[in-house]
Amino acid sequence: MAIPRGVSELAVLRRRSRADEAMERYADGDEAAFSVLYDELAPRLYRFALRQLRSRANAEDIVQQTLLQMHGARSRFVRGAAVLPWAYAIARRLTIDVCRRPDHDPLGTPEGFGSEPQSIAASPEEALHRRRSEAALEQDVARLPGAWREAFELTKVDGLSASTAAEVLGVTPGTVKIRAHRATVALRKAQAQRDEDTIGRTDARPDKTEAHP
Image (cartoon, rainbow, N blue to C red; front, side):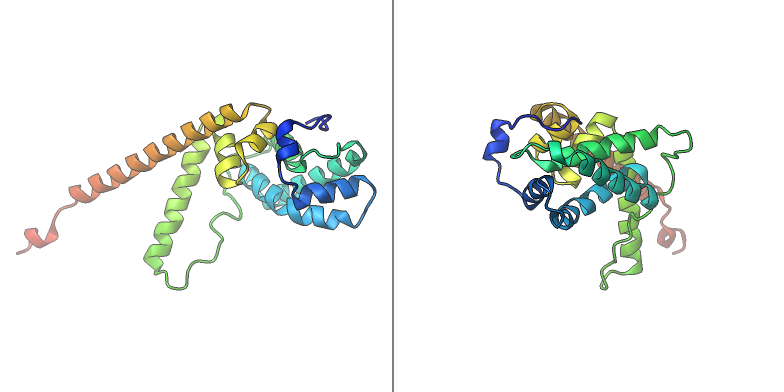
């Protein structure tokens, strides 16, 4: 993504974030601002890259390469522009490059997913059900058309506004909203079908209590 050369009306009205302020200081030569910029951007970029690449090592490399590119172009950063869509756009382009490599396995076992600590009160059965539900959702998201999936993940998972996601993807906010909505509808249908199949399998099981009076 090219360095922003103008500030939209929306950007002027938008409340400045810590990342925006840190990027401006960093662009002006304040080296200490980099630590703030890193703390604000690195975790989000890492989660984004990990979802796409399913590899911790590759995700960490994407973060480093993104920040390196931002460092090289910092003197051209336009004061008043938002840094988040720029950072995401760089990371997105880098992940696309990795996905195009012959040795990349898009169906590999995702590292880091489902690794959050389970509730102490959760039973083994509940924990297993939760892991299966998360895995099913990941598969449903992966099956979405690429444009729908990107809009859904940026807005619903990463929490970006439709306007910010639009800047990342190079489309209009309205297009982002439409794609995210279609993705949400598709995911709900997939979940409903899975629930229906589960009920059907349960109903089909023989009643052992009746078979052995």
